Length: 287
Picture 1: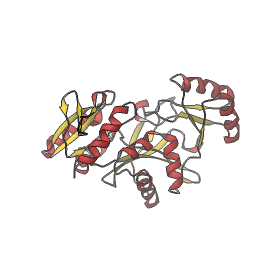
Picture 2: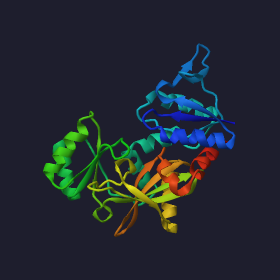
Picture 3: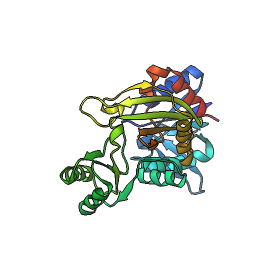
Picture 4: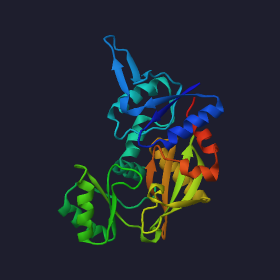
């Protein structure tokens, strides 16, 4: 069996661990260089997917990102007709887009942080923030590891957040009330093969309110309630993902979904769960 392992040059931890796991399991790992993936269509209409190392022929595809790699979108649609994908392209596209994710979770009837999707226009954003109630959290619709996420206590802070968020170009914005009682804490649930594999509670580092590991948060393994397990599995299913990282918040009115990630970095959880994490992802990524 041959597993395609997409390689994002800005996030090497996951592909490195998956290639090591493939070696332990006797699976051939074929690295796929995301920045150079192309889909070649010849005069007869035949389609070949390739990267700088040549044509790509695999039995399964490991978890992947699409944001920032638009050519890979078309290439992976082709691969999806030839190989097994835990996560379909359309599901990954929804997970890449926080607004689309919120809409899909609402369709599924899953509890989530109240969300307003609005244009990148300061006057309207300020008006909506007043309706939501400060403190608020503002986000670009795309982003990871806490990047492009800002909080504001008042209109002046929101103006600063707006300017920082719009510095990278036009975008729709997400506006949410800050869940004050959960500030600095979240739960990461890793699902693969359609089942819960690992769960940790993450706590923000000193002087940081975001609980992402890249921002210095620490974590510890915890247990989910039955309802929380069902919620996490339901969130993945709503996006048609069999592999996902689901972020939950425990609030005074109950647990809610914060985000859904189609290609979570599970490597920081490996000290608590061992090589099983990467091995199971490899197994679940093959037919």
